[in-house]
Length: 269
Image (cartoon, rainbow, N blue to C red):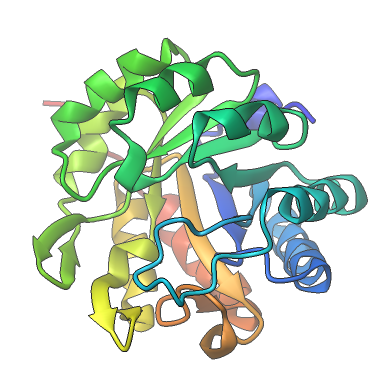
């Protein structure tokens, strides 16, 4: 599936959304169908997201997902049955040829955004790239990340997901969103930006209620896309439960974001 040029719109941001990890076929189909309907009613281009492997879990005991083969089977089923583009993370270069056969968007995790070989090889694929800005990088440093991909068009997106503030806190410097626009479309990751990284019983925490607050702030800056993880029962999610948004509440979240987005005008000085 090719993403049409109208995917980028001055009137509507696009949305990347789904469960953090592909827990099951039924879950992914349920989320994809629900989000497609909600986005369709609002004219929002939608990309389904789920990870086949969570390779950077806090604890060795953390649920990592179903693996490459089963994960891609689920993503392909969602893509063909629901009829939406799909996105997943890559962790190692050898995985790229397998992902390229199925997914529309390959995501570079924040912790891997400086991995030169991974970026170079990802840039050679036919897929769109979504690169998470590392919690340890300044917005200005992302220009070098983009250079490694060899991409010079709208096929390479940069995602803001917060910056390390303390051992278990992230903070979003909204100036970075505006600065990164010069290198490509900017996406705001509302749910990971409210994550509290670190080990508390072997899991990261988060402030789910603040995700919408930060998303509205990002909408005021006119970001071109949003990233939000969602689940029918967030507290039961196998990954990122503390900051995942409830699926039933996503239509209201989208309405709040669009209300701000529709009146946002950023002046140039």
